[in-house]
Image 1 (cartoon, one colour):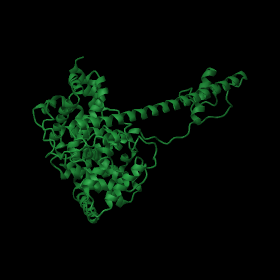
Image 2 (cartoon, rainbow, N blue to C red):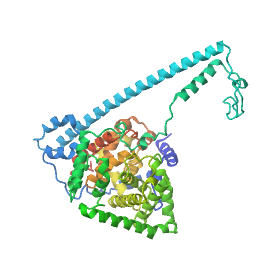
Image 3 (cartoon, rainbow, N blue to C red):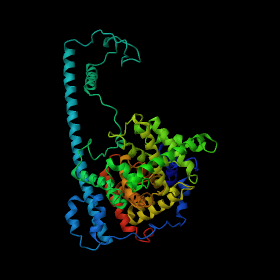
Image 4 (cartoon, rainbow, N blue to C red):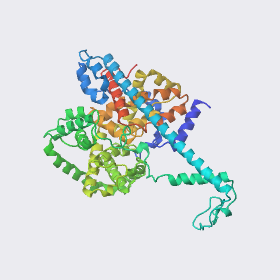
Amino acid sequence: MSTDGNKKQFWKRSAAKVPGSIQHVYGAQHPPFDPLLHANLIKAGNKPPPATPGKPKKATTFQEFESITSDAWDVGDDDDELLAMAAQNLNIEVVMETANKVIENHSKQQERQRQDDTTELEQREEDTQEEVVEDEEEDEEEEEDRVEEGDVTSPEVSFASQSSPYTDGRLVKSHSEAPIGSPKDAAGEHAALHRQRSLPHRPPVIPLVARMADQNTSGTPAMTEREASRLDKFKQLLAGPNTDLEELRKLSWSGIPRQVRPITWKLLSGYLPANAERRDSVLQRKRQEYFGFIQQYYDSRNDEHHQDTYRQIHIDIPRTNPLIPLFQQASVQEIFERILFIWAIRHPASGYVQGINDLVTPFFVVYVFEYIEEEVENFDVSSLQEEALRNIEADSFWCMSKLLDGIQDNYTFAQPGIQRKVKALEELVSRIDESVHRHMQQYEVEYLQFAFRWMNNLLMRELPLRCTIRLWDTYQAEPEGFSHFHLYVCAAFLVRWRKEILEERDFQGLMILLQNLPTMHWGNEEVSVLLAEAYRLKFAFADAPNHYKR
């Protein structure tokens, strides 16, 4: 079959089966967009906007560069080597070489840890299998002894309330009424029943991808000395009468402790003022303003000119993080509906577009943590006081609005912001990894076909929610994090899978891989390495005026 035939069959199937595919990310305000017909639109020669409005200040010594990035990279054993370079003048070659060493060391440490975990898991499986085999052998010996003694039937006990496994729903009193099987079959069933009874009762398990705790840790480990020290720095900085936002950004770049994340996000997003005395009054005023919007607009959701928007929101909300029980609670879904509908009414240039619903979830989770200590996946929000729930809703609305203010051209008609960013991603990848870029070209994979979702949903469909929250710590600390730095994160994310990409030898295989990248085990370590690589790319290319051109 030709490549075109494969592509048509793939898109026909993926439109119906792949959640979050391109045909699933448009809302009521926009018609479906066919990437195969319109991929050439972004090749019309439109130049992307300048990478930054002005040249950022360059670091002139390695101390300055290291002070910005050491927390993010957690260089550890590399400190001596890096400090030995401190007297050298910084240039792009030094930056790239040093960053590569740091990332390589992280990768080696991570691989060693993964091998150790795999070995331990295999040993546990072997021990479990040995126990099962021993149980089966003992059960078979007991059954053989019973057969030799002539005890092949069960006592005549009534099982009127149970159906026999030997019949189509017919009730039997004893095994003597069932079809006769071999003693070996009976022994196997007995062994299976024995194993089933010996297994302890386990509560429902939340899938790995849906767990909020960092998967690089087991349970809730005690805070390390370094983590405690960082938490103290945050608390000291936030305790002052006027928070130094620049220092807060530097401290937040490498991750924000859970205990101070809610107030830090509110400050970094511009929702709260730096002056501590004004914060309570600002919060009270903004929360009242939001619920004023609810009273003014929410009843109009069933009006003729708003009902399409509301219907699309109502359809999308249950699809938001379906594996996390928190988001399947009716009260949480009602909160999301109000937030998204009010935002759409107040932003008619874009209205509601599918994908915006995902952007509420990190804020909601972080602000729930402001009121609880336990894990959030199964938390029943109805146990919160009504005032707390109202505060979480209003704060989530305003912080999501602040985020979208910087990327609203991603969601206006024809979504020009996304098309520019996808084109910029293609040009950037062609510079940093020509092999991957040519491999995509060889099998006619257009960047718009997979990277559209990366830009539209800010990688939320590609990463577990716990990783998104960690990623957003850095996005809020980084100037133009959501609108500009995200491009470099996407480039680093794509190149991260170069081995898997180069192993695929057809269009369909590549698309399935790129839409289902295996990140469910990811935690803070993987996100930190991704961000370090993205920072290296930004540092190397952001000041180059032609870095989007070959």
